[in-house]
Length: 505
Image 1 (cartoon, rainbow, N blue to C red):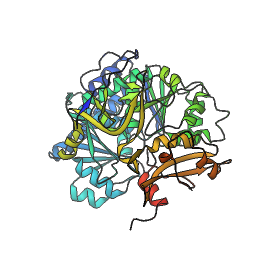
Image 2 (image 1 turned 60 degrees about the vertical axis):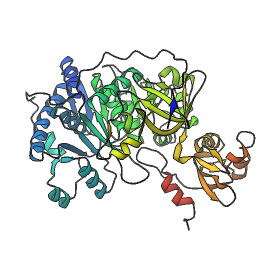
Image 3 (image 1 turned 90 degrees about the vertical axis):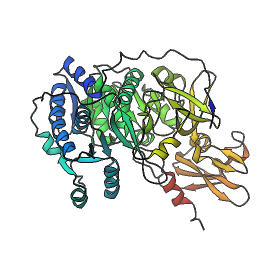
Image 4 (image 1 turned 180 degrees about the vertical axis):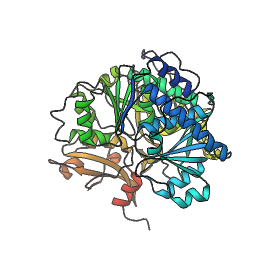
């Protein structure tokens, strides 16, 4: 498929910091040497200074190297557990040892962990509290289990030794949540991780004075790489919550006064609906990042009315993930836009309106899947699978997933476009639009709504008139108690269709 780069006027972006060191480990080592006694990370078990985190990572890297020597054909390390300082120590230790970390989603079934560990070439798995790999799998595949509690007991003295990492070596293998078939392991090199870190530092203007609250799971690149790793390499303090809890978020505002945090729409909705929202002091937050799906304008406005700009970030596991995003200024100027290409990232629109990306932050390919790798690139550009547009000011706007487009009577309907109108109607708490099979038109839009006080189905259906073309207007509304979501807050469309559509005959 051919495509042309779409020219558009550029506006000045915040200057990127000086290029980081050549590997993820050496970048962290250099940062830790600047202020070793500064607190690096705080979690449920206490806190670690930069010197202590560095020492822990050197001790852990020696263990990982021994495991890799025992299994020369499997040289990567799995990480299974909720957010903790050990997660960051594992990433750094792998980088120093020249191995890749393979984060495992603790919310998946055990069989899925096993498949990803096997596909990812894992020789050992770090197990967090309450999460254990199946014993028969570990024995059959000769994979070692290393408990998080034992890692916490390692000496806090740094071990001398070389940096085995290389700039072009894989540092992280992140498994995507594909809609068909098995998840695919996107391979991100040290170069990609560092390019993304520079993007995050410039985008959120991160300095060593910042305190970043991470609540989203670090088994996804969003929770790990949008703010957390960039902040760590900038010398900031990371406050880790094991998982999102609204009550804990409001407590953290009081106890830690974070300057930055990362949100998804489901989290934003939970916070706004919480009894503590109205009285909460948000003044410490310079900004909040938001990603993973279209962010409803009403959620953005609720935060911005409290003085917190919502900087939207667009990308994917394959892009490490920061590719297109909003600065603080853009967040205030154009709520709902996904911003502009960040730093070294380049973006263009394909012939079908697909957003395509290029830059040093892009994955090298999918683990053990050359066919999928080839299909994911066109002329050296990474295919996002999303459609977008660029406005007259050069701002980018997300439109929809290519595969989610509803084809009604030969016309393409973007569910996201319909959802923007529907979401602004009275009484709509949450909504999604899917295609419903139709004998005459092939498909017609169907509105799925979580209703609150003031919602009226007939008024909602009538409310599209004059705002959207007739073929884009939903023909019916289905009310549900809640929209099914993935762990990153995206609406799970497969589960939603199973909920509201009749089984295919």
